[in-house]
Length: 390
Length: 144
Image 1 (spheres, rainbow over the protein chains, first blue to last red):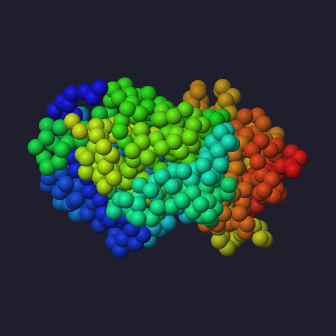
Image 2: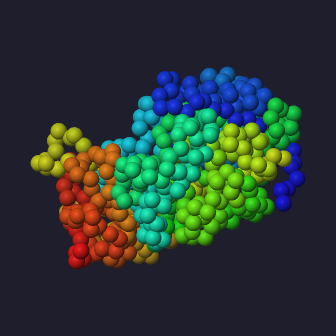
């Protein structure tokens, strides 16, 4: 099943994070530096030895700024990935490629944001995010029509799914209740000890009617997460059990747009890109997402969990509601979903705190540890990875 | 949005972001024409517009005036927080146009409780705060 580890295989050697809050009280550069330092310390790698950096096009922290804080002595490689959170797992793919090819030895993935205290990531914006190339493509087509927030952009896709399968907003509440249940027993979660009921979900106010309520949305959070990736032969003598990247893939398909992704197909209820990710990932990792023990799937909004569960092969199209209701995503279910509580329960560091939780699950050190974890699936729309102990 | 030179009285809708590649579309709207881009070589329709045809790689793009008829493919109503430039929550919709393109727009003049996928609609144009116009759609189906 899982292939033999080679010396140049990419492994995750360290993870680090700040607290997840609504008001960090410090700069994004400081948050990111703290998370990076923690990832280095976790691995047992000196921060000055970091020689590669990967983040998102949307991240506000410059690599040079981070180098000045960490004391990096020779940064050989930097890359930024498009897409925001749906591309979060692309960073794992890029780190794997850099390490395996020998371009860099100690690659630091980072994402840090004050998206609650400094700006509001989920609120409408008059002009949109930076246009083309800044992590967005065609938001310019949305702004004059009042489609100015992630919730609204997401709703237009969610409605096509609701329409096709007769799903109602209360069905999406299954995801909120599940993830808040997981967060309730995770001390690092913002919603620690705060589970909700389906009634709470249905009583939360409309963000976009009749698609998304408040409790369908992830939380705007302040915080940072960093992941350190290195080669197996360098990691095996470090502090932590190395977590191998068995496979990682990224895809962009014709006519794709970022979040306002309305033009690629007549039927938007289906995530063709996630289906492509699984096909390629199975070939590379020799294992399917459904054969792993934990599913860390990007939950910016609840409908995305429905659509990704189907596209990543966990259930048939239109059956996500039953799949979740039957307990498959529970901690003791067939494929526990985001045991940390996901972005809805723990905090929203734009995909990155799902990756760090995946590493903890593979190490066996998570707050809500799933039993007998060999491998973990990391899925974010256009990218996927399978990781596990060597 | 708060352009002091705004010529419209009362129009508060945000202006479109006009780029070199999208100018043909927005210029058409200012003339109250719904113009979708077509490849001058292979005649494939493209929206959103772009400077090169992904099928034949021609760069001579032209505009085709659409009938303005369409069908609602998806919709939602952003309520909280309120979007900029609207006094009441707009109905945001994806419209599948007769003639083959999908555009993001608004459906106007309908009770949100009666809004649904599949309604037939027809284009009209509304002013923006800076004196441009954008396409919106009015329902032509009988609604109950």
